[in-house]
Image (cartoon, rainbow, N blue to C red; front, side):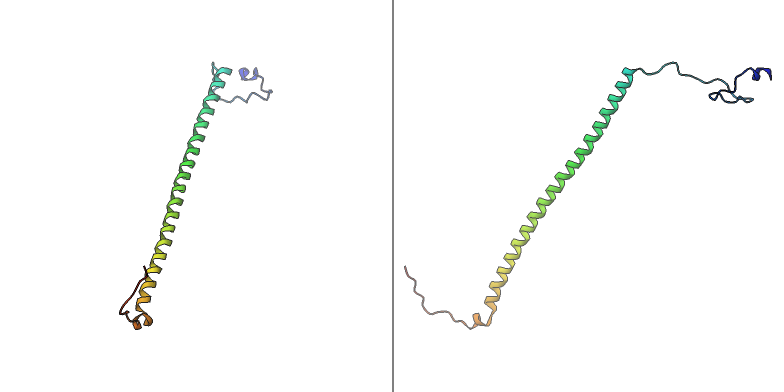
Length: 115
């Protein structure tokens, strides 16, 4: 027990030593210097910048797709309106031909045109 009494256990940074525990801590002999830290930070910033650029590129690509779809939608709506007008015109001619007034008309015997 005398070997344990020689240790100063009153200091707060030392832990109580117990039986069958290692009393040696491993300390790294090398550490990074200020240049290495600067290089590591620069590399990390480059990686973050590349990630940012990829995200911006994706959003702009989606913007182009949305724009193309809007243009296609506008073209289809315009074509629909044109077809509705054409359908109404064709139906109007057919209704005029099928009406009672048009059936009661007769064809003229002679027509003269001014020249």
